[in-house]
Image (cartoon, rainbow, N blue to C red; front, side, top):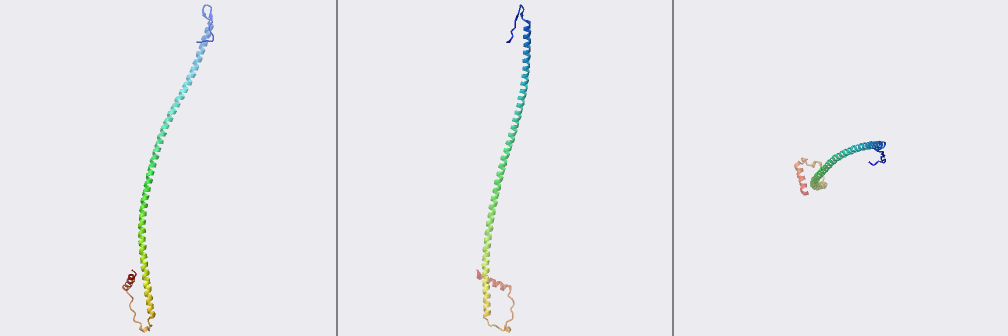
Length: 183
């Protein structure tokens, strides 16, 4: 131990008793002071160790939470990917069904247009036939009126007895005649 005070020698007995007691007291004080500093440092080290332990526990907790969040995020991503695949598949299915339906409707529409064209052509043919028949009837009526106008007038007594009205067979015969000349 390196002391600032050195011990003085006493006459025939070694060192002076006061110096030795002073050095012992001083060593005791120094030892107690170092003991207090050691206890303070141990307390500080224990507090730091407790803080380090707490920080390690928190880091472990954060790592655990990070793992849980990563797992949850992976599950959400997988679910999102699955939903995207399902919605894409469903969209393709809907588009395919719509295209098939559109093709069927187009085919049906074209078929109906064809039928309507045939009906229109038939109606135009019937109209032409009816026009021709009306022209013949008009001509027949005109010819009959001309013959009546050209015939001499007869007295009422000379009018022959009235003939029965034409039967439906006669009407059919006249209609057939008008229809045959149209074709």
